[in-house]
Length: 406
Image 1 (cartoon, one colour):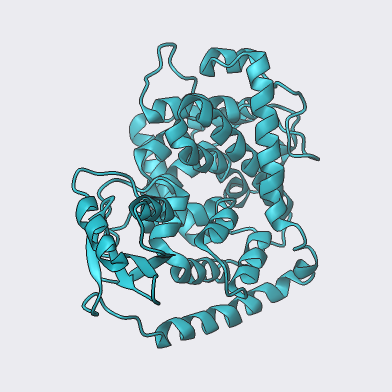
Image 2: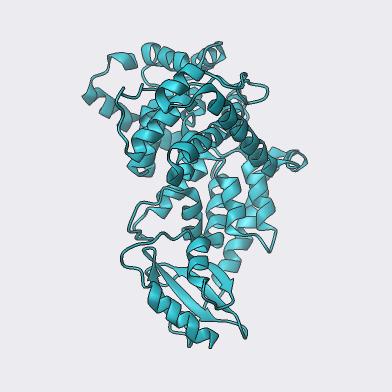
């Protein structure tokens, strides 16, 4: 078999098709901590979409599949869904629960020597996501959440490389070298690299170009006169983020301003600025990982997790099937197009109303309860992460809400 550095463009395309077939057989496992935290959320009655998003966003496998689902024809979005928060809003709490639990149920907890590699890479990936987001807030604020997703997924192919290549890959990973050097070793000694794996996954998940291209390019140096499109800016960000060697014990950089010369060159960040950004990302990382504090005792018996998930999933699906929701023809209901989505407004208790985000088929995905007033339209946009579009029925919605308040 040829090594990756010797493949032609046609052979690379053939490689991607081959990898996709192999990945179908092995799957991409989620982290046990994520499953435990989701189980905990399922048992709470007052859980919001944001609570699920804060957990799911730390798992590359779940994030990729949720983004793929949100971009499917079922939701018929005008523009690609590239933010995980927006994807979670579109899917709604019930679907998030069923999808997340069902996904974990389909994956057995790893028990082989590759498990430790998977756990280490997961922790590092969460930090890379936080750092990518922190840098994007400086360079491309409107794409900070996309930057988190790309940073999180940079190394999602590394654990899979062990499953695909075997023990020689663990020896390569054990080498004390920075990520770019390890990637070069993959490129010159193996038939494919972890970048090929994540590129294949991005194609399989049908991720939008603004996510897929930076993932495929993240170990390729940006051009000296790099483009200003979002994917090119994200490329520069993750090229730097993916090059940092993290401490295996703390999962954080060893220096206050790691690889400052590279940061200055590709993202225009001087050492003083870089120190602040790294510190901010480290704080966000610790806060994010705090979501999983206290789950250790719940993980005492990992073998029992699938059974726990099965019980919760069965109960959830039973509840969902027996729940009857009112249709859009119910008296007092108004439907409006906002941010490329359909929104139902329903009268509730005296002085209150509820906004529902609905699919084209009328299925209700998420809700926001409010007191009718002058700023409610902006509240609804914020609650459902709805951007302004040229076809918004904002005036009609505002008039409908004023009518409810009368």
